[in-house]
Image 1: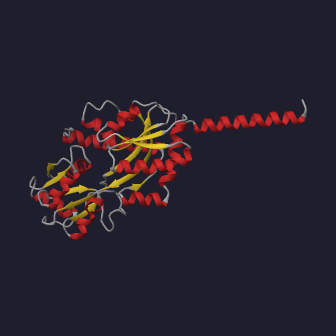
Image 2: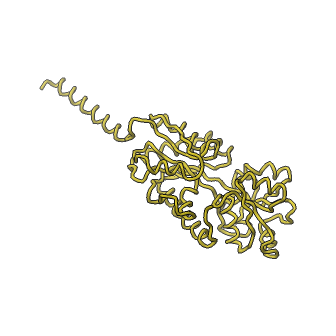
Image 3: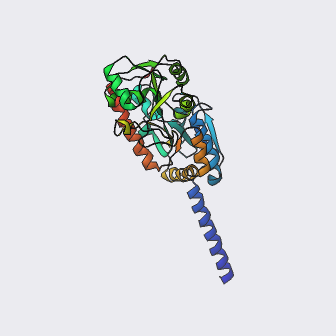
Length: 321
């Protein structure tokens, strides 16, 4: 065979092998990737849209957001989807905590889903009405022990962060505070502003303005370390309850049998987006802190969350309505 023909055939063979390798590395079917999440306008929706826009160029696929309303609809949708990397769910901890509070969920978050990344975390603030004569966590605990069952707190629906966070506070501090449930966080905040309830745990963005105006008093942030979302605010852990930590995680997951190569590729692209300064700032503006973990770290976080909250939920007898 002439040398020129041999070189040409070798070149074409190398190109073919390279194309095959690249195609395998890409691995996704040649169609749109969707991130399924909760209702439009929610924090999950904002985060999903930020990621969809950010990872589209790197994946070479159009990535869209599909809203499925509240509750478990987003998780149910992806549970039944093909495990080919084109259907992802972005949700908060309710996705893996709901099975601990109700029996009709229809999935096991650990068995049926593959973690991609813990995208962001949202700390909360412990706030009180100014009429309550306390200015620190220690003073609040002391007052509740003097007046067991006389103080109350507002919360959203059963199992909402505003509910579980105070129940964890009660458990760790060993105090009795009566829950007053509302149909959502906003009505509960209005009740707090009006003095119908005396304390709450809420996202900083929802109450910082009221704290600055003196309508509410902030006591501490629920994250283990001080948060840039609540400048100057101490942590509950540093104010008398060492180790106390309650945050709202938001993560991406795929159907359980999605190939590891696709999970890792998605993780790589998402972490790149989440580490960009401008995207971190955009998330900060809506009250969440960018994380961008590995799949293994996210899986460990889910397992720890289930153990931690499972014990509280069982001890407190919490069941979703």
